[in-house]
Image (tube, rainbow, N blue to C red; front, side, top):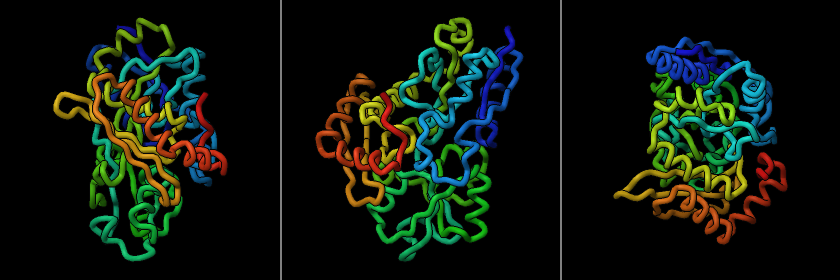
Length: 311
């Protein structure tokens, strides 16, 4: 079996993900190397993510290494991967999905409903902020950057009454002790692709694609294709106030989607069933745009709170 080189960000969670894929490849007889690559998003740590305004801020440098042949594949959190890849790349596999929901973490409160008036909540996500504000406009939402350990430490030290993180990352790292509530998608719709890993390769690299085929999970591929089609239809990157969650229900794919003002003053929710993942995502996206999603997103892009729409 040929040697395979994995490109990965250097965070604790990114390395867990890369090592997880490495172990699966090792079990198939491959020799595997991991190269740590620092991305734009990793280098800018003192600015809220939504203000950075760089498309592919967690993927660009890794794709450069792929294009140059320094690595053979890249392991990404799928929610960080732009819905339209640059020319020359493809997603070879989408792995079995870990819990896609958001987790409410706190030392003192069992759910966000239990938080006192004006409680300080940390999140780096406009999507989470918007949905929290829609239900609890009194909450004091503050940006939260850093790796998972840094964010949990800030919570432990009392800088926040609660923080919202992806359940999948906490479970992968075994850091679940401060999870008080897994937030249902009906209350906080997850990010498109949350909980799944996307394995990116050079477009047309048939040999590497064949080696990675066993990692692809058809259910995760269908659900996340649907979610990413919706996100793409709305022109969104990974830091816009859009939620998308698809799952199989009664033999059909069911999509829940949300687009909201960052301050939570307007929140549009739409759900629909279908059999074609991409068409379902596009249809729900069209409905949300017609219902006023276009105005919400134009305002968000207009004040520079999110990455620019993808072409």
